[in-house]
Length: 120
Image (cartoon, rainbow, N blue to C red; front, side, top):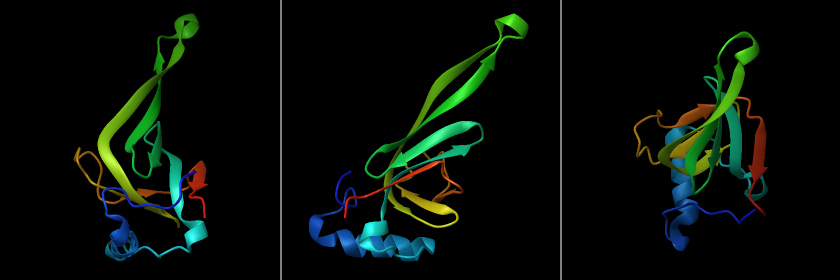
């Protein structure tokens, strides 16, 4: 995993930008070893993954056919929203640039199936 960073922000302004996002969204500021790099969570039948610095992506399982012809197909999903920060808690709070206007800002992701932290 990479070291902690905030995408689209100059190196000297990383920590103030992170703290300002936490304040804006009502999130606590986690200790450096507890900062989240990536999470996966399920929303409306799609398994979404948010990774700091990357666009949101997901996989939806769609059922086609009936009886013997029934198949489950995995359909990739994505949006053009870049993840800026992920704050741990219940729910997890995902800050993003809202480029696609698909998701609310921030995204509240409860009970993630996977959590990956930055390297300390």
